[in-house]
Image (cartoon, rainbow, N blue to C red; front, side, top):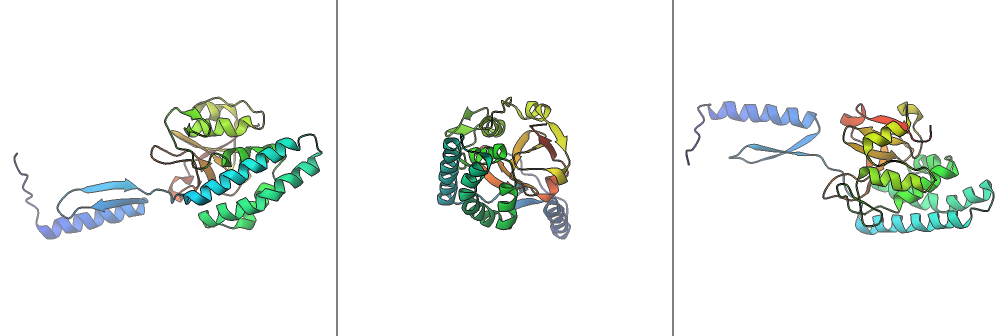
Length: 230
């Protein structure tokens, strides 16, 4: 094997690497640097919720979802009261993980209509379920659009599979008008708003599981928000 010889002085190489590192960091990319090798670039990943917390939220969401189903013959006020019994405790755990205001999250959930509250609880039951490309097996494996389809089916909305198809299913809304359950789409991926700015639940990518997530500021301008009920 022929070894490649660099003809650049060491000081220039160090300077070039430093400039490249600064540029990557400014784009939200964390490089792993080998002293004698090339830069290997890795994108910043979301911090996963601890498994015990994820399992607790999923369990509470399932109980809340079942309780709402059992209360379906009651009036809207009584059903909203049923939902509120779980909203506060779940919002506290989710907000603490994402380092956002639990009061703001709780308020967004409480002011949403019953259909969107059902969608919320349904989606949260899938926390911790592994991502798998093209999978549509709630409780076992899901891809991004399968999570959306599952959540909205709980409210009687028959969503198609595929992120592009789901975008076409609804209508675009302004970011300032996004509500709980609206869809967040950018090329190749779709997730669902949790009612607070840039906070979503998603089935992200291979090697990760369904998670709550705050969209990175560098990606916000690429996001298209969709109301699937419009």
